[in-house]
Length: 190
DNA sequence: ATTTTCAAT
Image (cartoon, rainbow, N blue to C red; front, top):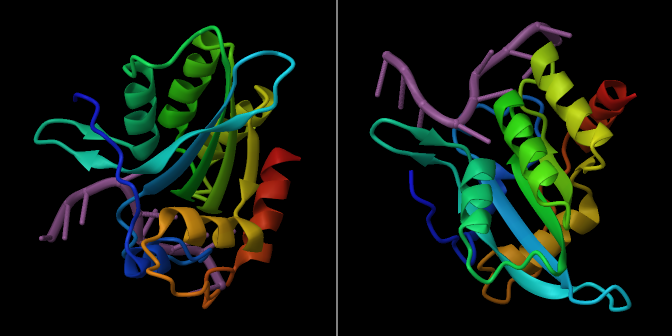
């Protein structure tokens, strides 16, 4: 699958359907990945905003591409990317990474030592399966920040990744099972 | 509430 360009924003209805921190999230058969990339050009500089957008997993006739994988191939193939600068990537995911994606992320970070990653996820994907737990543990051990999306994260996403047309942020049920999921993640990561 | 969730029916 060739890398596709990200979207700028998603609609409010998509955000409110796909991003609530539900424990039982039937019908969320897609995954959204909102990303922001910051760049530090010189060691004595601060990180500055560099790029942002939204990926959705893709289903090709003969292959599937999880949202994380879409981002990574886009980032790899991106000509403007430079090994000379440092990058910090932030993801806001509707589902946390599966074991395969965790593996792919880890080898990406092995390859690009100038990139660091923070993952904020709305929900934990199959969190009761041990292989999914191990994937998250490995990410954490490799220095990836892994957290459940909190109120501020939702507000940030609304502002930057939702086509809100001036509508103020509403929390609705976005944080419904936040505490439960944060506890589950805490148990997984120790 | 021990679940179906990067679809399959």
